Amino acid sequence: MSLALSPELERLIALAREVQKRAYAPYSRFLVGAALETRSGKFFSGCNVENATYGATICAERGAIMQMVAAGERELVRVAVVTDAPEPAMPCGICRQVLVEFGTDVEIACAVPSGVRVLTLRELFPEPFRLKP
Image (cartoon, rainbow, N blue to C red; front, side, top):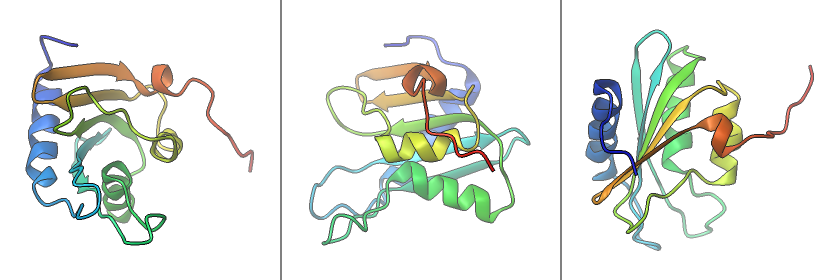
């Protein structure tokens, strides 16, 4: 796990921790917060919102992406994902696919109370599905 973090990642982790407090997870009790930074320097955050049907659950990362797209942004630079798990929780497969639509050289920080793991989206998801328009 990473020891020294950039000020940008520190800020994203703080934003993700703040929104994590508002997560709606009555079934799993697994609260997740995510924050992201765009190329233009804007920040967006999201938290997981569970649903009794499970399939309708929205992950924190996708919630933040929805906020970003709604604001007209399209280029990711950094993402932070925060949980209270013993080990850092990586974005799920669906979130990886959604994130890669907006950048591959994206820095990902996955934080837990005991530390942070930092890697790139390309490392985390080396061969994404691509649809050629």
